[in-house]
Length: 557
Image (tube, rainbow, N blue to C red; front, side):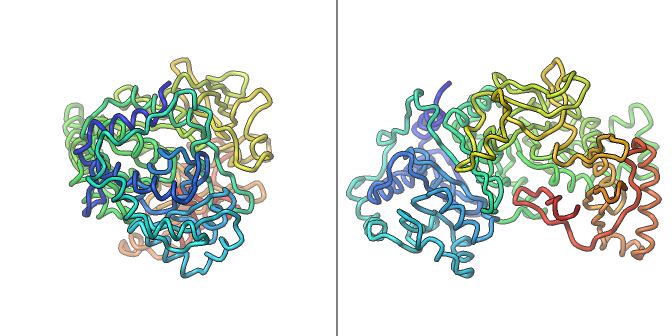
């Protein structure tokens, strides 16, 4: 297995004049310009006395400058601590301190938040902390060390002295020894709270294993375009929207602002990505807004029941949807992060839309299973990515649900300064507990039922998976999102409806509630008696979510 930085080292030198990072609608950095930025950071780190294995935090929204800062840290052999920009300012400071970082690199938006909340004082007592640096203008924001202040002030002069004619491809050498695979490369925090933080410690072998998989599974597309909308501080986006495209000379266009529907569609039309990584919520919104209402119309239902005509209709819908995503999806849409709505997936499969669903977790850096869209089996999460090993903690892996457990090169070494959580994450014989319930067939396909911790228990002792109920609730008219909770052995569906749509259709709150209760009776017929919905409640506000857009279930039990 090759060190992942060796691939990037080769790519930067080989594709020197080609575009690497682009802020959508703004500046573009070539691979050579990325290397120039990296060298400038390296001078700063060296002048500050930062050594191999020291930790540096990076907290910023997706941008080309984020990419340069991240690459500068990892190529310096420091440990990068990427923090999600959605974390509260206080948490950013606390997690930076908890991880023993020597420096925090931020963008303008994070800087403003830190200044407004006056949380920078949290660094004053942090031993060996140098300061906060702005990746947008490469200037210090606040210094807690004369060394950091001097190094920042002299950075341009030091750089010009070392590279009077600019950085050249021959100056670049980020190559690493393959004997260094167990060295800590990255600490990724799975939440923004520091009450009991879980910083996932990923060694070099984890990133290298994921890169080995990507290079083998995804056809190289030199110069191919990627549109990055997933948080780059999260492992799914970081690995496959960022690190992998860098190894093949790809151009990574980053949405520096929130991907609203209008902004996303404009970016897709311009970038025309050869593959598009996203989460189910984005796909489901597109389908619920543009596809399903049309396909559910009475005349359309009749037309879709006619052999021959149904193929023509589905192809027309598919072509329109394909063009919505840029019209160049050579490697399709890759969905991860949560389960895909069954009705949406059913239509995607019928119209032969190029999609697949993968499965992973931060603790695996992230990949566990994947299969390209041409061979993807509906309702699965792809096939196990070997040589990773997987087992189901049940009597029959194919038929009896059990916890999915994995072992292999890409698995973390543990949680930073949290031995109790680390022990709980592994079985006694060394397998990582994923916390997901599922099955595993002879073709290596992985099927997930739900999260172990989300499972409910009926009065008669039956296991209830709320995700299955929510999948059906989310298909009901006017429903934006839902949660299935248990109260006194009764299943209650908490529903956030599209109030504007209901109002425009002349429905009062009472009418809407009555309509949805009738719809729930229909879906109850499809559910086992022990998991049927006893009643529903309508909510005015959307559910609180994590930075990864998962609903905070614990708040609604």
